[in-house]
Image (cartoon, rainbow, N blue to C red):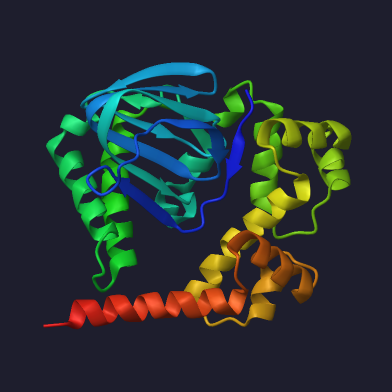
Length: 279
């Protein structure tokens, strides 16, 4: 199955069908994020790592990092879709990165009054401009997944016949801030560097260097937004050898410079603060 690699440009992303006209239907893709949809009406067919699921009104489904998946809308859905980086919830990081669900569908989850209320509150907060928005989002996510994970049976990744692509991506996710190369992965994973390159280009449609850079840029965005570290410090921390290489990669991925991105995030926070403080 061919899949497109997606790099989440923000820590938390939400799409609510009350505010968006899109259906859930989407082509084959994968990412390093957690993806979850709660379906209140309609019917969609989800394929995750070659397993097919019928998701109907009242159900939810969850996809863990590096699982290849796609959606086919059967009957137009009313839903809330979430994507977020696993390290947003360090309390559950070991589950998100070391396990996989035995089943990606959670039947009846949308009918649970507590889960339904929390996901709606989370969506309302995401679309708002209130103060401490990020902190409130994290709080709702933590409470929501604290309840949801009780309904999901997890299996340790190491007990699974894990595929080569998963091995490659997990290694890169753990070491992207180091000086990585195909030669190093060949030595560490005992897989031919030519085969690694082939798997990434055929499955992800992305080259090795572009994939590593996308992981580094994702972390750099967080550091630019949440810390006062200099651009040079951030460049070194996420694994770039030179500031020039960092600036070039950042511009390619984000279509703006690191400094412009930091200023943009500051303006957004200022607008939210002004809005929440207005009489």
